[in-house]
Amino acid sequence: MAKQIFINLAVKDLQKAMDFYIALGFTNNPQFSDDNGKCMVWSESIFVMIMTHEKFKTFTNKPIANTKSNIAGLFSLSVESVDKVNEIVKNGIAAGGIEPNEMRDYGFMQQRTIEDFDGHTWEIFYMDISKFPTKQPAEQ
Image (cartoon, rainbow, N blue to C red; front, side):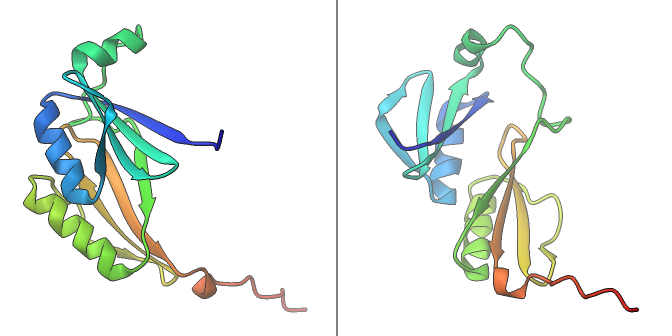
């Protein structure tokens, strides 16, 4: 079996969350979805499991973080162009997400941030590795 990543997120409104992730470009896999959780597919190896708080609590003894006021993690997704970065964030905002800061341009990478209804933070970025700065030899 190929290596895969499953990011599990607790959400307050499962349908609203699913609609938001579909707007970002995820698709739903109904095989691994039910009334308490939805499997949202980004690629053949990256999945986001959005779950009601009740279902999420069955996987942990810790309290669920309030990600509206505290950061629990930054999740980053690479895309093929700056235009795609802009499209995804625009669609996410139209679906009710918020963009907490402006685009950051590092020369070789352009990055925008979008938060879902529960405050889960996503970094959408395009990177052109050919523009990555090379270390200059030390002067003698």
